[in-house]
Amino acid sequence: MRLDPLRAALVAAATAVVLAACGGDGGGDGGGTPPPTADKPATRDDAARFLAQATFGPVDADIDRVMALGYAAWIDEQFARTPAQLHRAHWEARDAEVKAANPASSAGQSEVFESFWKQAVTGPDQLRQRMAYALSQIMVVSLVDGTVGDNPRAVAEYLDMLGERGLGNYRSLLEAVSRHPMMGAYLSHLRNQKANAATGRVPDENYAREVMQLFSIGLVELNLDGSAKAGPGGAALETYTPADISGLAKVFTGWSWDCPAYPATGCFNNGTSGGATDPDRWFKPMLGYPAFHSTESKSFLGMTIAAQSTADPSASLAAALDRLHQHSNVGPFIGRQLIQRFVTSNPSPAYVGAVAAAFNDNGAGVRGDLKAVLKAVLMHSEARTKTDTSGKVREPVLRLAAFLRAFPHASDSGHFRVGNTDNPGTSLGQTPMRSPSVFNFYRPGFVPPGTQAAARNLVAPEMQLASETSAAGYVNFMRDNLSAGVGLGNGAPFNRRDLQGSYAAELALAADAPALVERVTSRLTYGAAGAALKAEIAAAAGSIAIPALNAGGTNQAQVDAAKRNRVNAAILLTLAAPEFVVLR
Image (cartoon, rainbow, N blue to C red):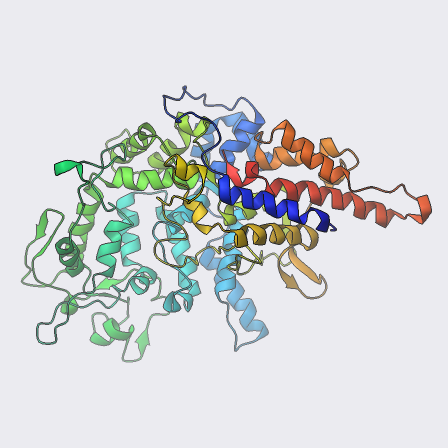
């Protein structure tokens, strides 16, 4: 694909997204009450835009389904769908293959990435998988961490757990996360012990702090609409204090591996006793070991768990998680983040309030119903309305996923071997499940300096990943993907990259640059590309001459190559445009 003359323009376009996008160019404040939304989309572009929010990218079959069913019925249908294959099952199958080829080897992190991309690109349960991905960025465990990275099978199971519990009840999800050994290892409450005055040991406070700050109630007291409650002098009220962290940390003492000889000390310390160990201990829910659990009274968030004469870790945990679940902050705090992950970075107070209300009561008196919450996120009229403050920057993973689905990609190996995409200069600058910290790849309240968003006091979380390096790296990465395919190389008989796209429909239009661009922009921007952008892309693609067959000795292969270059140019210029990078 010979697009070198266009490279500078492409990088400039992508960098413009970094420096100026988010927040629009209009003068309105994005306020007001959005009009009521119809349940069925008026156009295919409307259906595609909805699917860009709810899936890893719209495809024709899903657009047809939304057009036929309407938004609500499509969501309900998705809720009922199950994964084609669990992530752990994929990892285990691949591990068996690897061992069969070399008994000294085993599957690793790459096989977790394979399963993620396989489900993202081809999974029938798109909404479930998108919810699991969203939650993986709120309740973070990261393969960057040494212990977590050494246990990829358990990380695959953690993703499965998020997929299952993410469409259940928040209280159940919070317990599953709190007792998962991957979270226990990542935030250090696995093998956390009660205080010992003689040695000066105190309970580890890491998880107690983060379960409040990041997974449930946040830093400041919130109204239902997500606005901060004002205390004396108008200052925001903190949700918890250091004393609350210390009190809650006692709850998370005494938790360690599931083990055949539980509650033996060796099981607590090492997951083994008398040579007996459970090979699934890294993902089976942690057990409470009374000998290591604090019996002291535990005071936090306005409640006290009375001192225990006999240590009961499960009772302490249940009481603590019930308190967090019932806290008035959870609905607006978690609800706002889910809106940001699926729909828009800057939801109105009314939007946050509606989602929080669904969390508080699903209509049947149930608190924490995550299906009701997710439906409220996707069905709110503000999700269907475009304003100059609506929408969000698509993070790199979602950009690649949308591309892979828009132009159907098949995997030669059947495994979707995308690989590690950490490098911002040569790849995406983001790999699923490899956040640099528990604070995710980006913060919910990030304001990118020097942008229109900053000037208008708007947040753009995904922009925390953006830089001139990542903008240029993204363009070059996608240019390479279009030319050679996506992912890791395979040996014979393929001798090419694992994921190969189908561009038959686009190649059929290659001789007509405007028609080609109309199709490409429709598949990637869902009506957002205006006439000026389409004309600019058509002019660039049309400048790639398609020679006449047999003229001057031109053969069919040369004609086909020129057509493919036109197609690649049209797609790449669209992928670099703000109309694709920013989902409005």
